[in-house]
Image 1 (cartoon, one colour):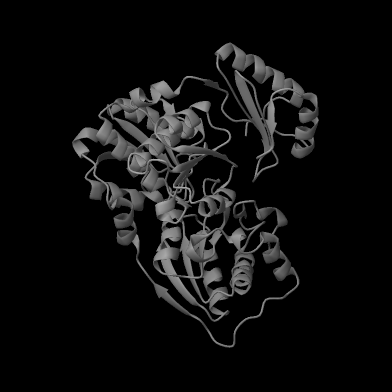
Image 2 (cartoon, one colour):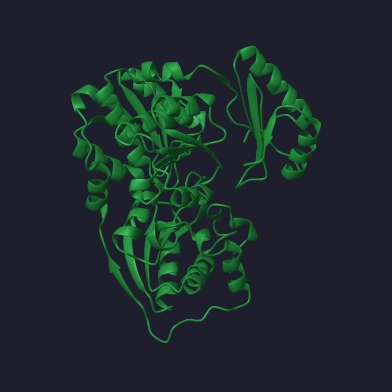
Length: 451
């Protein structure tokens, strides 16, 4: 059995197959989750990765030994698994996926009841401890399994109460990178009667064309070219399991995730004035300013879906957006949903009538470095060292170290999933941004990595 300790990340379980996570390992994890949650009914879904069928079979058999009822929703996106958790009224859901990681990875995204993230109920270390101590107790009775197709119900949920004029949208280009989203988005856009050009819609877990990661510029190059070639109004790109979405404007330029947060916030605040909108602390100053000007209450938050969702639920937050292209909606039980993000953008553009580059242009009033990564031995120690060297500015530690000045700010935080130190910095002028970027790099004492 292979279960490496390092597969237990802050926001999911993910590792290299089969050296870090294999069939027996996933079976034991599923059994441990079932026992710790005292679950009687669980949804299982899976993406198109080459190892997913074998891992599914092992997970299924392990759960049947626990005597529970399994709802098998088959091939699906992560967002569909969240929906199925709620729609089927289960005690938990397990999605077999490694998100945007390369093809040799696989893993699990696990939720408890009402699609709440697993750490709301148990620690991932509890799962590991139960397995290592051989504390799993199987049932004397076999469970049962039922196959359920929820695609139509899911698409209906995403598109309900939405009015979009396809003529005002025009033609868009969609790149799913051979991930699972092809089957979802084709149904969604057909229902909305949107004219679209598909790129790499054939599901292929080897990802033959490019890594399914809309945050990587090299993954967007074909999309950018196709938008220009087709004279399209918009380009969109999904990650491997369909829960993140990237956008390209009609000029072929990438639209940062925080600017998309602004547009969605404006659309939601049209009918929800005074509501709280959360945005992650790496976002441009313009996010806070635009939320206020649109009648909302901005609230800065930490990075990571496992941390954001409980805060949203506790504080009754209507919407949250991350720089990493995750967008969260109260109406979907506080889960992140790329399809809903797209629908909100299309709705805004349909009502606004402007090209999206003109919509985002006023938001680009500051100069942002983008996220810069550094391979350092001890990210937390390095942050403490830098904090001691910087005595002025408004300093806070919501997630790593943030310091705000009158004309610039920066955030340094350890990655939730990788041994990296991440820097985000913004200034009111490009020259000041470059100056302060070089200053922070000198304090870190390392050149940026290519990760």
